[in-house]
Amino acid sequence: MTQNLSVSFYHNKFHDLSLDDLYDILKIRSLVFNHQQRLIDVSKGECIEIDDQDQLCTHLIGRLSDNQIAVTARLFTNNAPLRLGRLAVNPTLQKHGIGTQLMNYLDTIIESKPIEMNAQSYLIDWYSKLGWVVSGSEFIECGMKHIRMVKNL
Image (cartoon, rainbow, N blue to C red; front, side, top):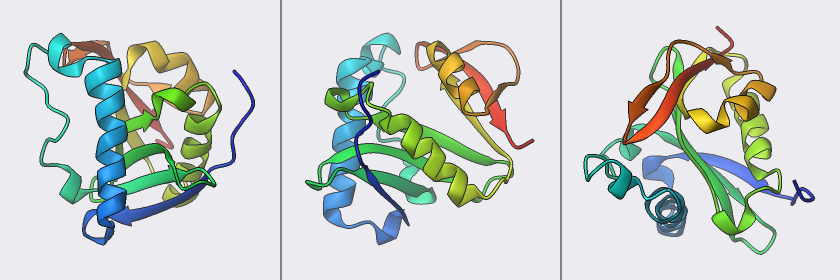
């Protein structure tokens, strides 16, 4: 990993996002899931990035000092346990500690409440270092290997 970059974090419900925030969120997720990971191809068209769930979420956003969006994720706060999803780091900024910074920011928001996610399996070790625990067996979601992970349960 290279040096950490300084990122400013904030979060908003969908209807409180600015148009610029929404555009930047969707751009980063498209770059990561559609271009880098080829979600549509590997799922044979079954999964789409814009899935009618964003309106139900709180969106976490991290920006660099030049206002460039670096990372985003969505948090379902009406679930018990809470649910994290769509974590995406700008591909040009990956391996700079930005994902870890977002996860640390998430911890301040959720205040030790139970939380779960379907993590891409290749990230198990990284999430485990952040206190997440595997819960269950590996499964295929959107054509990719995933595993349920939990924290604070």
